[in-house]
Length: 321
Image (tube, rainbow, N blue to C red; front, top):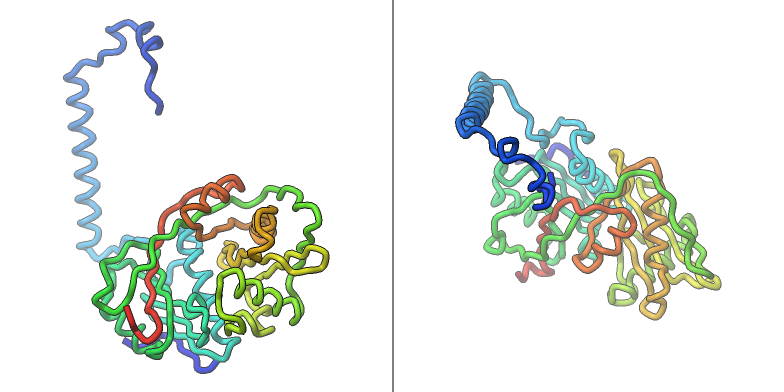
């Protein structure tokens, strides 16, 4: 299967007291009425289902929300997925890497040491595509030594026999647009990253906070990355960079990511303050983020709601599952 795009480098129940006040004759329906209603509802449901099947048989397409040409605004999940596709492609291109896209899969390879930069996203539900072929295309696209991640918005079959390893099912959370952030902790200044030295400090915090080797290459490091659909924020205390956050923008949503605090600076609320900065960088837009299980209560306190769980696979370096 050839990609359509590629580029090179680059109701509550009543309580007993309330029920006791209602005459029994008022509380107890006529069983024959119940039977009639139930059968009628079943008949309507059956006829509706039959009509749907007839529509498909007659060639009328019934959308499932994931046709390639469907507008992003069809669902919040679709907006999230397509915003990530665009952001991953931007990161790869600005790093001189490669991107490709099919109707069922989008891939980006900035050749980064940070494997979440090397990002693939499933664009069709598993029942609508051949996952073995999807994985074959992934293994053909990424070099054997490349550590990459595959995100599916849906549960998938076991892909370990295909050479991938399951990372988990991270929660996707959503926050409606609007609201006001609480005041930041005393002494914390939050600035938007616009300069090369700020970007370098941003990357250094990510590397240290996530225990990556010093000097780790990432697609975020190039200044051209700031020209894309992203906003990055840096938290400063007495002029020292101590925390980060960022947001991918696109298709009507703000996707919050890159929240990190230096190990020695944790426990002061800096991470929450930076998360607020990214969440409200476009206050007119819905915000989404991937949380950890432990982190969900923190985000719920900010107004985020639990939406669903995603599925995340990866191919370790060298293809070692």
